[in-house]
Length: 248
Image (cartoon, rainbow, N blue to C red):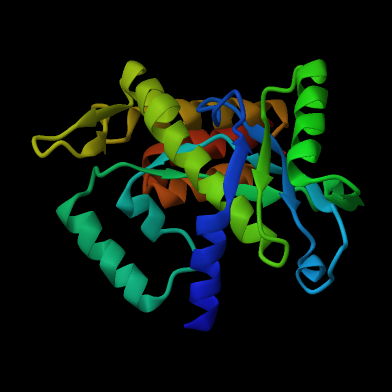
């Protein structure tokens, strides 16, 4: 309970000093460059010390988002028995309910931590000037808590994902005919005549092309077909990749 309280307090005290100019792209991978600024925790017990700001710099990369259904999620690994039962119920009751998946990877090799003898406000202003000079459009600055700086970072990530979903992702999918709403106002995926989501059928075609050109391992395509439960419909084309020497 004490840990939850600290996390809630950290989230409450976190302030986004600069939001990135762009949102997470719906059509390609996106990399966020972030700076988390915090007053070192030891200054709380040291009198007449400071100003000092600890700076944590790094990057987060999202792969291209996927438009999902409960049935697809059910075929992914890492869920408990209880979670899978809940997903099964959801899949039965709302088979076309749309969801978004963001594969988030931390670029730890890009992460660095350093301190400057300036206040958080002064440090933020300096970084903002550097961002403006470089023309960076996917850079954020966060005023966080030293001991729970990653919690502060997650507040930005959550806000960025929500804004991207409603201002970028959903309009993108709707405009392309991949997404619509049901009679209750829920977002659902639009399917083709074969019953496969239109967005998925386009992605699968691209994957076939990549396998033919040698840019994608056939096993990746096989897993994707299995997750959507459509391997039988594509199996002749899949095996033709090997008979014609199109796959690796």
